[in-house]
Length: 272
Ligand SMILES: Nc1ncnc2c1ncn2[C@@H]1O[C@H](COP(=O)(O)OP(=O)(O)OP(=O)(O)O)[C@@H](O)[C@H]1O
Ligand SMILES: [Mg+2]
Image (cartoon, rainbow, N blue to C red; front, side, top):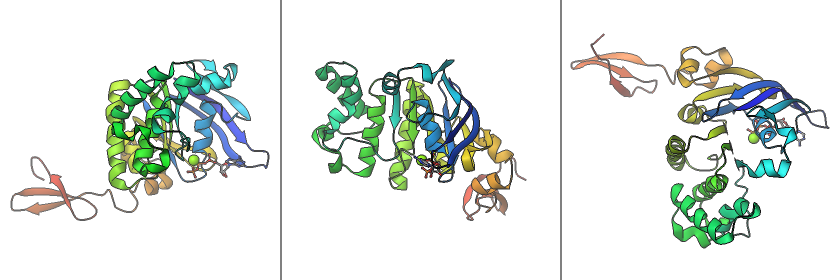
């Protein structure tokens, strides 16, 4: 379990990135932080592995303040997929994936073997192992990022817009793979995105953030859609524009349910 207790981050230039955030991420669940650019998502994420130190407040993992942990050890024990791929450009794919286990003392051969297994896990062809990151497509690089974050078998995965740089089709594929992986691995995942559909697809719980990390609403997909907290949320999740509005259309064969773009999504059972 990860707990943010009244965390605040104010940078030396006076920018308040995160005002006062309290939030619990239960173990083995995926919590998605979603909000517009500059709402403090990356800042919050990086507080967990101490890449950002809060100005005040605490972050606890399973009850222990991360400040009491050695920062390097802590960072290696947590999987982190960065917003930009974060791969080492002059290091082959296989060794990019094996970086943390090797740094932590694993024999190189064993780490490489595990890296190959992980490549299969995230849907990468073994042939790509010898390439450099620049020789991969965007989607392949993102998969390497995920494999690398999994390499030391961390309990916690921090994922910062990991699928942001790929087209919608590949993005959907990566999302499905993450869901499959998570159903097998049961990690504690904090996933950041500014795409509400991605948040709804992946999150057991979704936390909608406004400026300075202010939590506007937190809940499951259904809770948020059924009862949006305010106009900001209604707009953000697409309820305001009618995109999610369903209407009924009588047909000779029964009652069809039609979405906001006029497409039939299903039929009403039992008739209307
Ligand atoms: N080192 C820094 N010095 C000063 N201000 C910073 C620094 N890092 C981030 N900020 C500011 O803190 C705020 C939150 O930044 P953060 O990167 O957490 O946002 P974000 O929600 O991840 O945005 P995005 O969706 O664009 O990635 C922004 O206003 C940003 O400009
Ligand atoms: Mg960010």
